[in-house]
Length: 208
Image (cartoon, rainbow, N blue to C red; front, side, top):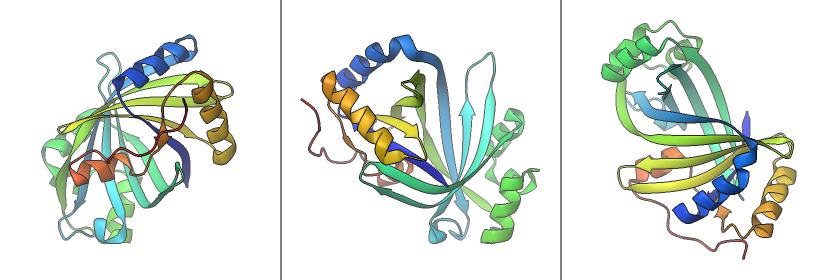
């Protein structure tokens, strides 16, 4: 079970202001390409699951991860989702991106679960989106600040994985309020926004 605090930033100005405030704590930035798959008979989506390939596109160290996510719940800015992730050869991942049927032959614990537990016999690609993720070690936690680039617009979000999400959420909110960073609880996952084909409507923002 992955448990994360998820807070949405309203615009690029808030995103840039936060990056500037966090700059002393920066440890890395990932340029990610996320692409998603379902079974050809909707075996995954019908059981509230999705398969993702995530490529880290840094030229000096390309990486690829295959991930199964299931039974996601997002409430009050805290996400809980069953997740199983595994690193795979980027060349094999790229071949599967280009031809989803090659996922059937990938030597992967995650793919074996997808086939055995969900009964997937073939795959279809759903498309995806890119994300620039800036990572910070801040105040005893790891903050991930995302600039998500959809075909229909950009979205900005802060994530923080924690076994004490309510406590960490309060710590982040206090920091935002002290520094005039507008924010709101995230109400949809990145994947759900992608499938909806539009950004969520603006909601009331915290901080001023």
